[in-house]
Image (tube, rainbow, N blue to C red; front, side, top):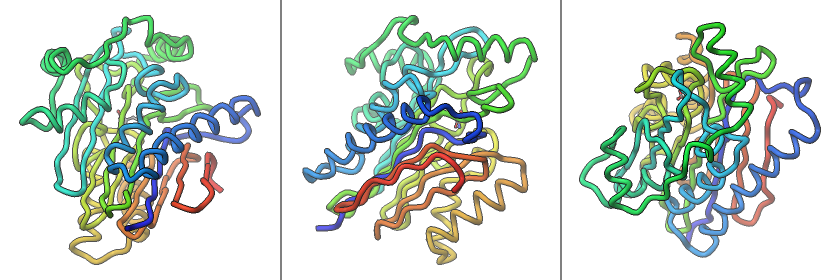
Length: 310
Ligand code: ASP
C-alpha cells in the first residue's frame, strides 16, 4: 500500500495581499479546505485517484468563488460555456467536454465521457445530447448567474477585451479549478474544470479540456492540472511537456515544472501555473503569476493551503 496524496488549485493570477480582505481570504481558504477534504475522504477509504479528483473538483464547481460550474465566467453573448477534462494515469483513459451549457458539474460529464463513450472529447450540442443519455444534472441559467461575473463581462465589453476571470487591474486572476491525486494503489489521476475567459467568443475552447495541454496523467511520470491563459498553454502543450521532460530527459518533477512554467511559458508570454504530483508523492505548485489558490494533503500530514507567492 502506498501513501495517498492530493493537490488542488482554484486558479492563478494577480492575487495580492493588498487587494484581499480578511473575509475574502477566509472564504477562499475554507473553499480550498472543503475541496481537499472531500478528495481525501475518497482516498482514505482506498478509493481511486480519479474518483478523488472528480469529487474535489465537484466541490470547487459548486462554490461560486471559483470560475467553474456555479461561478463560471460569462461569454461575449452573456452565456456560460464550460470546459472540463479528467485523465486516469493507470491506463491513460481520458474524458473531456468543451463548451457545455447548463451542466451542474462538467467534471462528472467528462468522467462519463471517459467511462461510457468510445470518445475522449465531446463538444457543444453533442456533449449535451450525451449528457441527457447519461442522466447528468442540468441547471437553469439563473443557477450560474453570479453578480461579480456579470460585472466583469460589462467591464470587458466596454474595453472590447477578452480577459481572464477578473478584469480589474488589481484583481486579475484565473479561477479555473483542478485536482491531481495519488491513491493507495499507486495510481495517478488529474482533472481540470473551467468557465474559460470572460467575454470569450462563442465556441472558444481553452486548454482545460485538451488532454496534454491543461490536463495529463501517466503513472510512469506525473499528474498535472493547469490554470492560466489557455491559448499559451495549448501552444506549449504544457502538461504533456512536463511528463515528456521526466520520461525522456530524466528531469525530476521539480526541474520539469520549473523549466516549463518559469522559462518556456514566460518566453512566449504565457501567464499562469499548475499543480503536479508524481508516484512518489512529490507535489509541485509552480506559477509565474503573483499568486495561485492551492492546497495539498499527504496521508498522515496536515493540509497545506497557499494563496500568495510566499
Ligand atoms: N485556462 C483557462 C482557459 O484558458 C482559464 C483559467 O485558467 O482560468 O480557459
